[in-house]
Length: 163
Image (cartoon, rainbow, N blue to C red; front, side, top):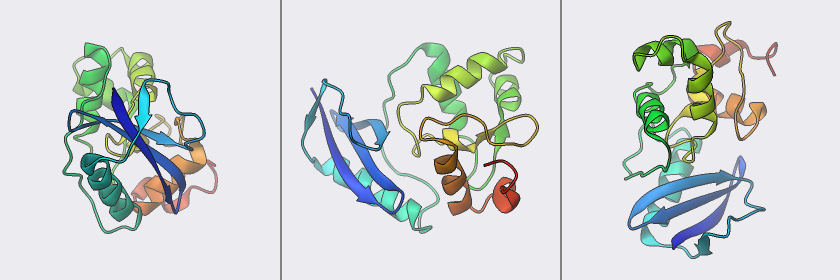
């Protein structure tokens, strides 16, 4: 059974789950806990929480954590590509589709992005619409804006028109 634990952060409550030493999920809110998780703070979860808190404080640009997201092969291909987006930069769904060799799969890339179970660590918040606006995010567009502002990305220098 996966272990999960919740932490208060400056962006609200975040849950982190792990199994066999791998981070498997990061949750926003923490009010609903999936039944497959046992609430218990492990050393791996503590380490992930420390790194996420450092990231949220602007002190960390990369994570050094073993992750094991559960998904289809296509979803994993998209998530691996998300890991290649540098801190402070963004990509469009179309760019991601091209990078995985499926240039016509923008919508499928968007669905895979939305199903990312390890938000923040696998940076799905760095994906924007083709016109440069913020689009869909499991934690909400305001959360996406906050995460991009933490990274001080070019996209977020003037987001007043998008959120």
